[in-house]
Image (cartoon, rainbow, N blue to C red):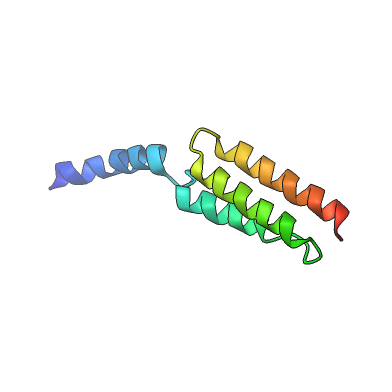
Length: 86
């Protein structure tokens, strides 16, 4: 039993390294992208809101893009729309 307990810190280190607190899960990514998309101004037309919804779905469905790029794209989209529809 003592031997097993000595290995616990090493196991924790391995788990933290591969899936630790700094790791962003797919669910976290989806929630963050949805949060940003919901910050569109109320005055934005329905067509812009539909486009944003489709962009959100595309980003969530595309594992090839990194999370940083997805956030950057969504931030830029919402920022641009916000400049035109305040």
